[in-house]
Length: 104
Image (cartoon, rainbow, N blue to C red; front, side):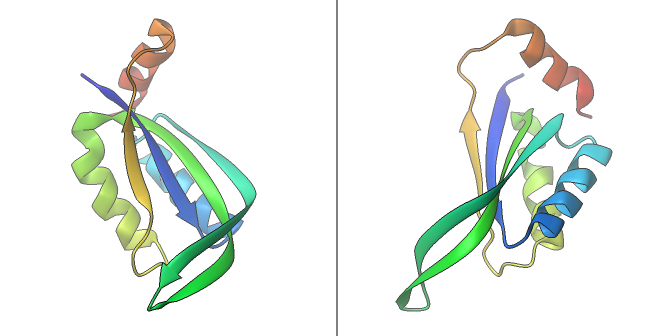
């Protein structure tokens, strides 16, 4: 089993909290960290945009990613939500084990 750290962005704190709570409740992730106050600049529909966003970092397992992505997309307000999975190459063995125990 391989663990992943997910990086996601949301338009508002309320949306991030709603999606984060749903992910944890469904045991698709072991936990989420929600960080408000990020400023993003990006290309969208042919021009540079700027927006305030909220970052979510979630811990899960690689084998759950195919369930997490459509779940988040269904709840997310963005047309193309940022959902990026980063592999965990090492870490506290007890914490990594906990991720596996707390996800379905």
